[in-house]
Length: 266
Image 1: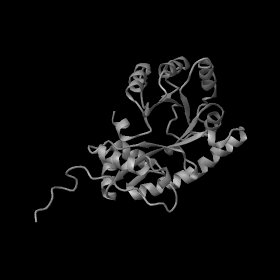
Image 2: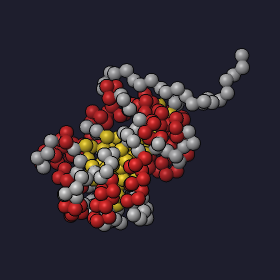
Image 3: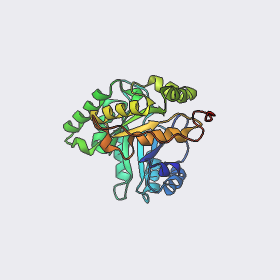
């Protein structure tokens, strides 16, 4: 699949809107197709019961590359008191206690979810539309780890953000604006990563130094998505040593055939 060939670490499927039905067959198919990249499923617990999610985990147990994310109906919407995931998590982990389980993440739309992720999960996901300040949110996660007696390095902190990288700033904006759903998400996000590769890489460096360990990119639906993915790969994949202040920036990938129009005659 494209994600494997591109060198991506993970591809995530997120439920939105009406229930998707039984996800178990989808998990089996996608997990078997990916040879290297991890597949992640973000499941809305308001539409899927514990036993159904447990079965998804069992279906994924034969594959090392699956993570299950748990979210509530409040996904992406800031609420003063979002529904608790604690009871669901306790029952789910009990159902898996004698089995190999997939990695588990919690989408945090409130401080209670952060505390639950510290106690039960491998990763906490910060949806950018639900947090006003990334630095503050990361500090809250670290504080919750300290309060819960958990080493901060043992809990991954994932940031879900809209990303559109172009060879020019105008190209990045055009990709973003041509996808209505993406443009709405980007407008609501305080940390949308949109622009040229070097500008976006500076932003990723900043996020890494804030304590973000995983960037979950929402990409625009563009006809030249292959080139957008190439830009994304150049920004982060295999460049951990580049994500440091003062380091030389990644080289732009070669442009796709025909980019910029036909060559001018002499």
